Length: 318
Image: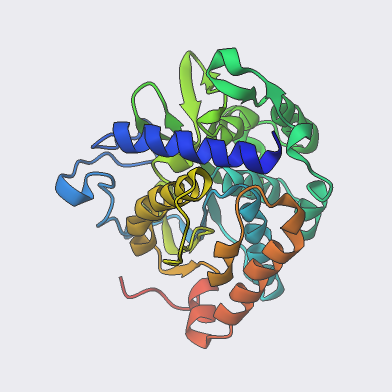
């Protein structure tokens, strides 16, 4: 079974599990994220009306979505922003977005982040672990992060970071912002079914994207301007009634739905339209994916109003 077949199998199984068992209310355990309740169509996201606090401590926050190999887009976004003199004051990330955010906050340049994964293959990071609740364990990926990250805790990072994972035991999003950095990243990246749930202090965690694939809620109240970067656009293209096509389409619907309200929380959202031609398994297309994020961001910052807002020279009207 090759990596694309594994990814398709994961799509199918995860779609079935999430659709049948999705929780009605999200109650993050961390003090960073506010609690709340909602009903009806908004039950999946009680943060729809969240805005920045009047005395928000950070000027610019950037929230990076999950998306597997599509996360290379985030590095392109960060490079384009840097070239225009823009750097975030706080970051939030889910899954692949959390990894890119952590490396960036640890001092890696966008180009060097790409370099770390240039010769990546999934088999380099995964180990068979079916008996523990997934086809593979994240031990290899954890070892990789332990090697490349200079900061071992959140407190050692140059830029504040919040990592979102899903508490599998209680069915809720959790924000990590202190303590062991690698543990939080592995928890956020543990795609259900494909990977064994990652246990921290007796709690089982899976991919943060199951409930919040664009973690705007984790920093919205604490930054005056919030830029969201999403790798999950989807067009209503034709499809065949095959297991793989239906699985992929169902999985995309789940992620598109749970980012809908997150995008409304952001002042601006970068979501390259051409990203829909790639899957989370397309590691070999890292350069093209990187360039999509870079090009889209360069286009955005050509707008003088956007540039002034991101540089803190004016405040949003919200």
